[in-house]
Length: 104
Image (spheres, rainbow, N blue to C red):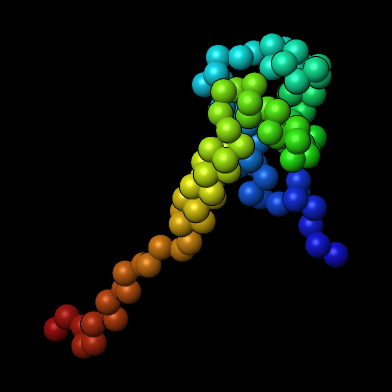
């Protein structure tokens, strides 16, 4: 059975970005909740990965924070690409083979 998006590691990036745009807009969770006609706990749950937002709720969140859904999407793609690059194993230098013939 496929994982729900809320259970995927990438969802943490989505929630971190939601919080980042709210903070950049200098909005408290309570104030953003008022803009969204929701409670502070709704905003908190979304940022803490306990509540998913649908596309329209995400759009409203973005508008309330002064950005477009398109801008959010671009930032998300950049963050996910960076996350992908950082999670790739780095090439390790091969260790030199042990020297044959020890010290005389």
